[in-house]
Amino acid sequence: REYEFKNLSLSELDKKFQEFIDFYNNRFHEGIGERPNERFQRALEEGKTRFSSLPQNVNLDDIFCLIERRCLKKDNAFSYDGTTYNLTRNRRSITRKAKVELHIHPKKKIRAFYKDEFVQEFS
Image 1: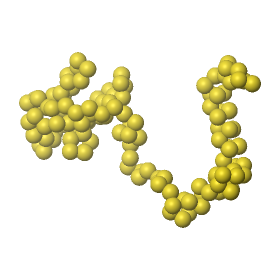
Image 2: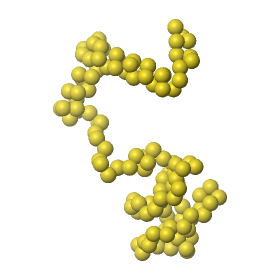
Image 3: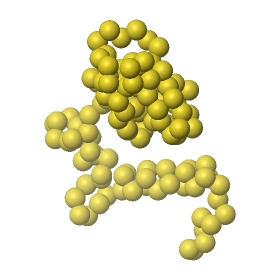
Image 4: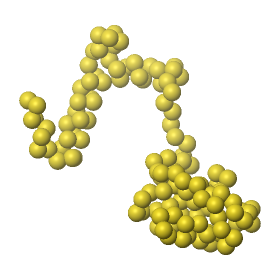
């Protein structure tokens, strides 16, 4: 039984995991005296959960990323991992030597923010 999942692909393993989640959440649980799905739905309806929907304007790329801060040079440039990037968008509010926050997806893209406002994306 311990080798049941040994040779499964990632998608097959994901399917098995989803089946387990469905089984677990829809069976009676003695510890809580009900099915976990029923308890969760009731908690949502009663506002007794910390889970909430994400606002529509939230970009998940800005949540699931690495974050670093950099000081801009006089020419609105910063460097990361040996590469220099220039902010080309006209931002009069960005002062010399301002600190920008970088939302980094290694080897994919960098999203630059100034004072929590999106400035530019580099791919």
